[in-house]
Image (cartoon, rainbow, N blue to C red; front, side, top):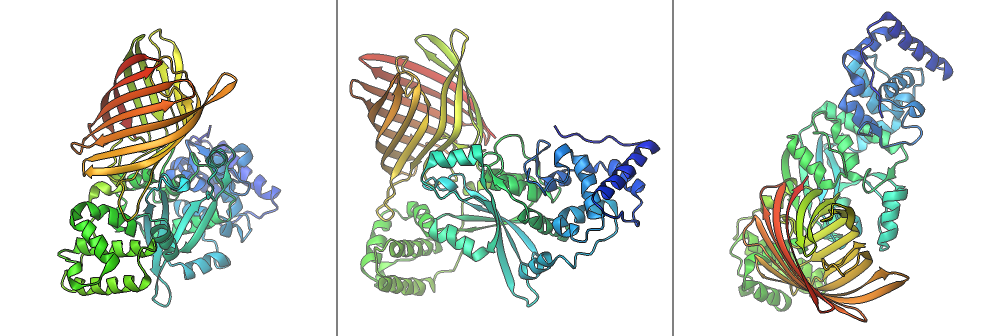
Length: 608
């Protein structure tokens, strides 16, 4: 546990500090900076409680007082770490006569020099910093969120990174992306999760042209970008810029649950001194957006929307006109075809034309003709950017972690369940910021207190992904599900708990804006004593959103093995009290081996 120094009041302790500095310098063959009154420095350190300062903690990348970066060379007091000891070691290193020391820790130097009014050190010899200032001007700082994609394991919770922008010496506006990530391009999910959570993967801290990054997310991965311009001062931006170099020169290890893009950005934005501190637990990209929003750091918001998303989003508004527009873009370019009456129709048809070209449903020549006709029609329609509903803003979405308490009544009595989802979301959550109903569980579980007051593991999901994308004739999306976990597959008392893996695919139809109907067919395997049991499955699922604050789920499931059939009907009613609290009631009927069991449940869930 990190230790913090108490104010040193006696001359003896002040002398001890000076002695420590002198010994440290002599060991490293360095010369003490004679311009500094070290006894006064020591008094300032304790008077200002600098070891406890949250900016100092952000510079060290601490989590609950413990370092997240344990690489040799980043922590100078690694063998006997405390925030106070690291501060003293940093001062010793910076003012010990090594002119390159400030190039290794330019952010620590900038902050300590300002806090302690220390003599300035020459940074003219730091060629990399000078080159960065020239090539990547930093007049504005923007927080960027790339929306999640459940079809890509590496992005199923979204991604956050920074955009820095400004005018160079020639007056040209330049924009760059600063991002932390790992190589997660793998279809082997178990291996990817093992390396990302247990072993750790090589972390990559990169600076790239922003245009290249935005094209990758929008055009190639079909994800939207939300840009949040941040309120920052020149001093804060200088500190952040210098910290980039400290990270660039450090070997970083990526952990999905503890040191990911979100945790790195929390530390970087923590250098502003105003970002609300993160709570304990798994930090996600949306957590960073919410923290910036709650800390009043966000000055303005801009969005860049992928064509596929624009098409699916605006398709709901087109009604019967949608099918006709699709056919006409495929076959004709007559002036009568487009019937553009609003800017939103213009956005819809432009996106549709681009999607059809991307999917090779139309030729390049026809695409150009369509674009020309759209441009002619747009000449008489006022040009307006696509206005996004604020409910789609990730900053106002539900938290990515949840804790629930429920009571389930069955033939043996009443069980109490405590369930926890450390990261991402459930199918029963409020998904107003998405166009599809989805679910992503990572290491979620539930503990049961049985009617006999014994404790038992009810279920544990290593991974569960469910994506119910509404079908349309242009994108033709497939709904899918993948689950790897432990527990009973139904609530039937004769359905034993087991390790299981299950996959399914199907189709979802959005019959009305409030009603989705899905059909999924799949197969899976579960463990039995000394054997594996294979099964096939089918599911008919309806999701009804009667009001913005309610959701009803009704499912019919059928599981068929070599020697038995299990049928299940489950209905669950959700009520979203506010952004954090929801309550629910459900009923479950399962028939197995001609034995039918009924259960009923009531529960409450808190998202955070």
